[in-house]
Length: 256
Image (cartoon, rainbow, N blue to C red; front, side, top):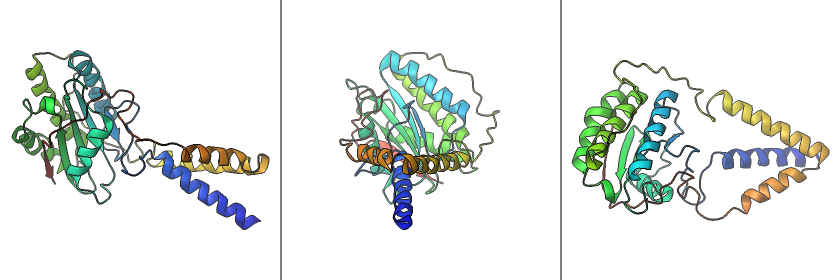
C-alpha cells in the first residue's frame, strides 16, 4: 500500500511539473506569458529591460497595432530555430489581424542561435537584409560577451526605430542607456529558476500529503483530470495577441 502511495506521489509530481511549464500539446511550444511581449524561459532578460519592452509595445500596439515580441527558450528541443520561430509566431497570433504587422525575436542561448520572424505587414520596413544587419551589428556583439539584456535592448530599439519611421510615429519610450547600464543577472530570476523551482516542488509535495491524508487523493485526481480534458491549441495568441501571426517566411538569423 505504501509503495502504491509513493508511486502515485511521484507520478503526480512529474505530471504537475510538466504541465506547469506551460507547453502546448503536440507542438511543444510555450504559451505566451501574462504580459505577452516578453517570454523569458532562459532567464536572460533584466526586469528593467522587460518592463521597457512591455511598455513600448503597449503604446505601439495602441497606435498602429504592431507588436514586437521577445522570447528566450532554454532549448530548441531538436527543432530548427527558423521552423520553431515560424510556428510560434503563428500560434501566438503576433501582430494585428488586419495588417499582420508583428515581429518575433527568438533567442536560444543553449544552442547559441537567434532568429527574427517578421509578419507580412512589416516586411517592407524590415526586409531580411536589414534584419540581418541588426542582428550582426547590434545584437550579436553583446551576446558573444554574455550580455544578453544589452543585446536584446539594442536590437529591440533598432527595430522600433524602423517601425516608427515606417508609420511616421514617435513613441514615448522610457529612457534606458544600453551603453551605460550593467545588468548583473541572477540565475534565480524567473518563476522556474533556482529557489522558485524548489518552493514549487515543496508546495506540490505538501499539497499531495494533505490530499492523501485527508481527502484520499480526490483533489489530485480532480486536478489531473482537469489537465487531461483541456483540448485545443495552446498559445493561440495570449490575452494581448493582436490576432495576426501570418508571415511569408521572411526573417533573418545568426549564431554566436
